[in-house]
Image (cartoon, rainbow over all chains, first blue to last red; front, top):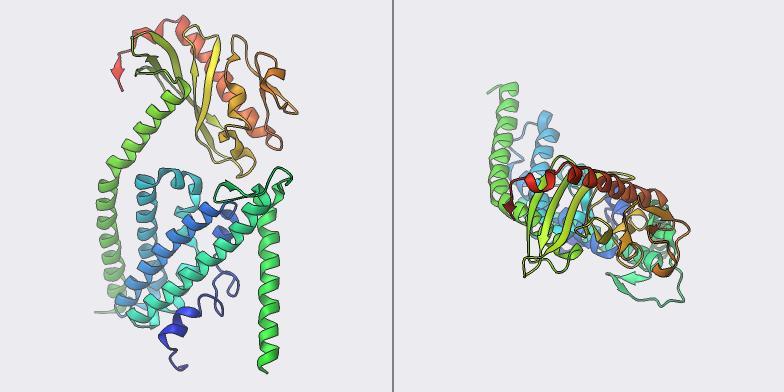
Length: 205
Length: 201
C-alpha cells in the first residue's frame, strides 16, 4: 500500500494532480453540457459536491458491511438517493436554477466522478480521509466548471453571471455556448493542463 | 450468514432505508413545489395581463387551461391562456394574455422549455423574442418574420420575429399559440368558457 498522504495533500490532489476534469477526464457529461453560463456551472458544481460528499461519508462508514459482489449496486442506490434529495431541494427552494439545469440534476447519478471516488477511495479508506478526498474532488470539479463556464459565457454571451461585461463592439461567439464550444474550450484547457504538467516534470527531473 | 443471503440483506436494507428517507424528503418538499407552481401560474397571469386583480379558471383540459382575469373594479381584462406543445427538444409550456374579444395578444411568457441553451432557449428572452409578441393582432393565425427585424413597427400586425439561429424553436412557439388560438375560439363558440365551474385561484 502506498504511504499515507498528509491531510493537506489528500485535499489538494483533487485540485490539480488528480483533478477530476483536467487529469482524470471524469464527469465529462455535465462538464460539457451545463457550462454555457457561470450560474449553471456553479449550481451543477455545488449539487455534485453535495452528492459526492454525502455519498462518500455513507459509503466509507458502511464499507465493511457491503459484500463486494453487490457494491456497485449499493453505491448507485446511495448516490441516487442523494441526487433525488438534491433535485427535490432545488425544485422546492431554487425553482429557477432547477429549471435551468433541467435533466442534468437527475443525471448526477451517472456522474463517474462520484461512483469513481466510491470505488477507488471511500470503499477502502477511513471516514475522515474519504471526507477530505470528497471535499478536494468537489473543489476541483467546481473550479473546473467555473473556469469552463466563465470562458464560455464571456466569449459566447459577452457576460459573466448574467452581467454584460463586454460592450456592444463585441459580437458574441455563439458557438461557445453550443456543444461544439464546450469541446473546443475543454480541448484547449486540457492542452494547457498537459503543457504545464510536462513543464513542471521537466524541471523536477 | 452465507454470501447470497448477505447480499440480499444488505441491498434490501440499503434500498429500504433510502426509500423511506426519500419518501420523507418527498413529503417535506411536495407542498412547497406545488406552491411554487401555483405561484408561478399566478405570476405568469399578472405578467401577461398586468392589470389583473383576480383570476379564475374557466376551462381546462390536457393541453389547454384558460383563466379569466378581472381588474380591481371587476371589469374583464381578458383571458390568460396556458398551453403546451412539443418544442425542438422537449415540451414547451407557455402562457399568453389575450383581450376579451380575442383580437390582440397582450403579452407572451414561456414557463417551461428545454431548448438549446443560447439558441432556442432565447424564446424566454424579453428583448430578442417576447417583446415582439406584444399587441399582435391575432384575428387570423400569426406568422413568423425571418430574418428578424429590429423594430416591432416594421412587422406586419400579425407577424412576430423569429430568433436568428433558432427558427424551429420560434416556429414551435408559434404553432402552440396558433393552435391554442384556434381552440380558444372554438371553445368560445361552443359556449364552454362561461359554463365551467368558477374556481377561484
